[in-house]
Image (cartoon, rainbow, N blue to C red):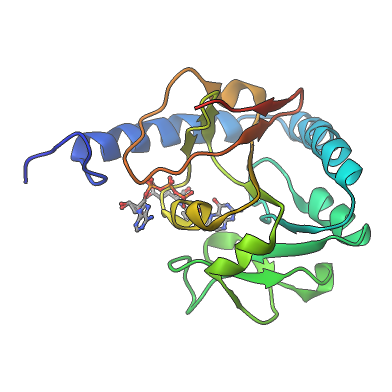
Amino acid sequence: MTAVPDDPDDPALIAAKRALRAELRRRRDARPAERRGADDRARADVLLTRLELAGPACIAGYLSAGSEPGTLAIVHRLAGRGFEVLLPASRDGAWAEPAWARYSGPDELQLGPRAISEPRGDRLPAEAVARAQVVLCPGLAGTARGERLGRGGGWYDRVLPLVTGTRVLLLNDDEVLEALPVGPLDARVDAIVTPTAFRECRA
Ligand SMILES: Nc1nc2c(c(=O)[nH]1)N(C=O)[C@@H](CNc1ccc(C(=O)N[C@@H](CCC(=O)O)C(=O)O)cc1)CN2
Ligand SMILES: Nc1ncnc2c1ncn2[C@@H]1O[C@H](COP(=O)(O)OP(=O)(O)OP(=O)(O)O)[C@@H](O)[C@H]1O
């Protein structure tokens, strides 16, 4: 098959994404635990200052795993403030077709596929994300134009077009890059939150 520039499965695009993911992942894994903890607290402060000003509502988040920017404290705190919190939920033992479930406390979580925690409760369809005023997205890197590099499942590329609220990518400061390999299906975000800033993105 001949690769064309707007082919989402262009082998050169896939190879470029894979190489960059591996490098970013190595950098994340090398961050000392104290540094991660301090960054998570700073990022939560930047984000919660913004969100709590707007008052209780619905937010779609994610449950961080491993060296990803941490979200557990953010999710717990927003739920405690009366926010309805939607979280990614696996279906049939896999992260294939997106679905959501409501957060109802740490005791109602279970370990899902790929060592990512998820709520035990009822599944809501992918379109339920339209209820959320804010959607927190995981990713390995982003740009000031709102481009995003995910972990390679296309889960958020399917979800982001259904979002009516603000799409916010959580990153470390050194993961906001000048450019990223992007294809036609890669969805953009509206803002990036790092430990030092809430940055609005401009396409
Ligand atoms: N915490 C968290 N929850 C999430 C995501 C995420 O990135 N982080 N997702 C985001 O979509 C969805 C799940 N999709 C996932 C897709 C791939 C991998 C994964 O482990 N990927 C391999 C690399 C695979 C490859 O290179 O082809 C890895 O990162 O080691 C994990 C989750 C929904 N929930
Ligand atoms: N909207 C979509 N509908 C169907 N397939 C899609 C869609 N978006 C992406 N894909 C497919 O999903 C696969 C992974 O895409 P990509 O590498 O861009 O994922 P990612 O953005 O890094 O991951 P994620 O969104 O899960 O964090 C590719 O084969 C891509 O063609």
